[in-house]
Image (cartoon, rainbow, N blue to C red; front, side, top):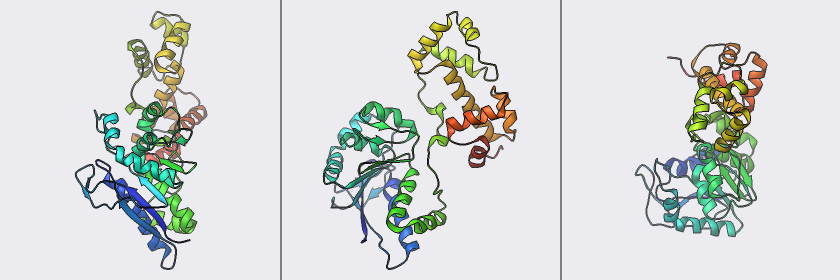
Length: 323
């Protein structure tokens, strides 16, 4: 194989780190592979003569050219950003993406770069992912896409999407593995201090940062559940607290939040358990009791179902200094 041609599409407001992250790791892989091995020919391209990235960094760019893989970085989703206006202003970039895909070549998005792919019509009928924080928004904007917020990297019919920021390295390691071999990818990961065995963004999800659904009624129910995590779940008692029947409580809560009170309670207990695992030295059994589970095994299974990791594995990865 000859050098793999990679083009990174720069545009106003894109993250500079997501422009250079993949090329830098490919450069390291070329050094690891050594001379005489097929490497990577990388260019930073743009349909514009000048590009200022997020944070004010000026990027040197060249016109779009024929490449084997086009990488689309994400952009800064600042509070209050009008995403429609942002995407509308990036019509030239959307045209480049569509033209590249129409030529049958590979397109890759990093994080919210997936929104540009959706704007180009590439995600309809395909599985995709993006930053977990904005996965629901991508699904609303592109209902024809099968959004998989738990995945780090999703490839479907020549289109690859990745989760947030650091997932660009998961994609790049996969590319290195395919083009340069498993050993080169493994060594590159070791040199760069990267985890080459990640498979899910679920352990990183903080549901407390997600928009909280519901109206005043469901929020009052949530608050009651949050304040009594260690109590045994009793639907009848909960209904009596809010002076409604169990059927009415379930219906109203589901209509407003899309889940049952028990499902919400389980998520809230897991969120609290994650915090305790990260910040305290309590045993897993003690944490299980603190969040309402008498059987540590039941708690561990539920925790793993929601986070992708057993409690002890989660603590080993995310433990913070209690101080």
